[in-house]
Amino acid sequence: MKQPTLQIKNLTKYYGKIKGVENLSLQLYAGEIFGFIGPNGAGKSTTIRCIMHLINPTSGQILINDKEFKQDDTETKSIIGYLPSEIHLYDDLTVKEMLNYHEGFYKKDIHKRRCELTARFQLDETKRIEDLSLGNLKKLGIILAFMHEPKILILDEPTSGLDPIMQNVFYDLLKEERAKGNLILYSTHILSEISKICDRVGIIKNGCLIKLEEIHTDKSQSTSLVITSPQINEIIRDIQAVVHSQDNTTASLQCELPHDILIKKLAQYSVEHIQIKQPSPEEMFFRYYEQENETC
Image (tube, rainbow, N blue to C red; front, side):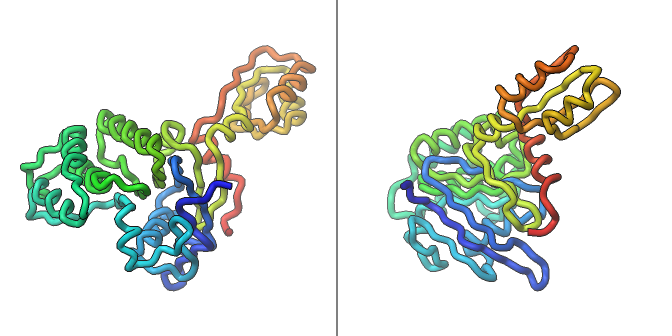
């Protein structure tokens, strides 16, 4: 049985009486990009900050390579690359000075990797950090997270501020890291990113994990349809579909039946037009959000 690289066990964090996350458990594996999705305030950043010991959990455990990860564990920290959602660095330094400073934290020589990443993201090392645009500041954050070649990458809203060209450069980098066998925890509220790069996805709502899915598995189990038929109401009842929109004879539907059973059922009716497509990440996300209750 494959051993998880990162385990979150019953993580709970309350800010006074306000819930951040509650009883959240996850197992993440080497060689995967795990998408952690939910709207702002759902608990994504709270979870990540607890993993990184930037805040103290109310209860729960974080294990890395089957060992509890504690705040003073510098050896484990050396194999983690972290990109926060908001980047705060020393404004009076140049990019070059900041990268030199970061290099000094590591015993191994990481200068070559730093140069590769700086060239790849087209970042000018002569600029002062206070003069960087949001996009260039995010590039610098990415380079700082990746330059020591970590085995675990924890990325919180990593593409905010990046232009479309740099987003694609970043996606290519993530795929390369996955191919090396590294683990990537990818937190985002941009749903279109999930199908591009992630292997699995966890959906968080009100501090609780409400769904875990493999991306390809979800696509095989759920189908979006647009059907035009004079018997549309009978069809909806028979295939037990969720209706997104409907007029007299046409409906946009979501169906969980396997494809072979769905086709056999539809063959019994007079169907004038049918369009079948796989659900988008947005449809998947909203379907689970609509189905789940507000509480854990």
